[in-house]
Length: 242
Picture 1 (tube, one colour):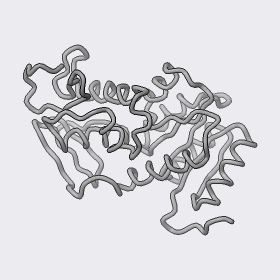
Picture 2 (cartoon, one colour):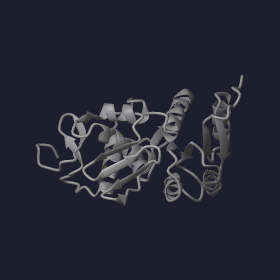
Picture 3 (cartoon, rainbow, N blue to C red):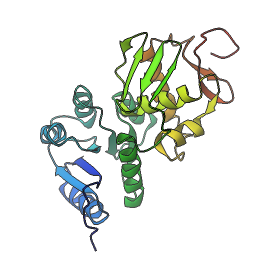
Picture 4 (tube, rainbow, N blue to C red):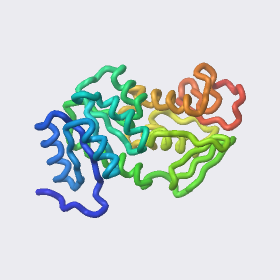
């Protein structure tokens, strides 16, 4: 029995060229109270995202004419909507490509519908700012983040961050000077630490370092604490971490 859609129901644009899979998945999500706009062509999917401004984009990798990676790159030029890549590709390199292209999460086929639903709900809460502390602004060492506005500046210059990168940086900034494990970071950002060991968090950290202007071999902002995880440093000195 379908759950009646409420005004606050999560809204998903789902781009999937497999008509049968897309239809079955969309029907399941609608039964669970998710509003779904299903598109089978990449350009139609892009148009739907820009027109409807959903909470989450579900994006198949193997699309006709444009790959999901290319679609994600186009979307990132216009919106910061969380993107969940959906694909049969399972290699580490494929995951890295998706994350470096601006995706926030990665689901491999065949996937459990309940898991997909949980990820959609988690990304929706993040997108609507329904997780995290009530603080609206955090600052340290020239870095300033505004939660409600979802913007970040470094020494007054705006940082172009994805939704995941913003939440990751917010989590690190809340605990500036304190090392956090990969599990803590994944759990705080996405609400589920099940993929803490697949090193996807490392890709997001690498992307974040690039945008902060951190040298790859000797990062000054997001430091690796050996045997622990990562720490945001506002001091930028040589304190035994790198």
